[in-house]
Length: 296
Image (tube, rainbow, N blue to C red; front, side, top):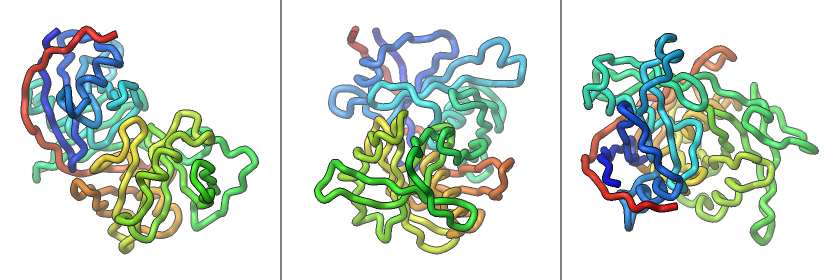
């Protein structure tokens, strides 16, 4: 089967975008893995499918459905950098004339908006912090309160000696663990990232963020993403890191997040009913077509 695709990137987080507005391609997890493979396929952190909304959703003002598959072929709930690329794609491809759209994801409705400077702002919805909402198995653990937030103890037994540290937890529609570090350049992302991702206390696995506070308006961040490994940037990871820093009393309400792929801007007013806003670049790299093998 031959399919057309568009390769895009947002702050170095790269995507394959598929237009399924006229019909589903019906790809298997193995075919998503093939597309994401950087040696034999196109290569990407994630594959984004643009679909027409269900009739009931369209009647409620939803413009598109947004489906996300990780490089390992698994479907996930949310992707902030992908949402920006999604918005740029539907506008550039003439699928909408709107600057602001409403998009249905597995995690709920988001509202990307193209800005005058060429970047895209996404209303990422409300952050969640209760362990059961992440989800995080907190049984037998006692958190340490800090400002308006808390830190949870975590132990990594897969290394010698075992590592003991504290994390903040958050859901941006997908699960995140945020670990404060002195220097992201020397943080043990490659060694600890997969151990945190697969830790038994995260039943749905987790994205592991390594956060360095520069000042109250700037941070540096590396994220080991669930199902993808370390990426150059992670939009939901940037949101989770900043809202965690705000709750811990370490950051103000508007923060620039410096990732290895570029700068993202996160804004959060800090209230229980306040959504998180993510702003950053979204760029088309190239378009093409590829023959997909009939993988099982």
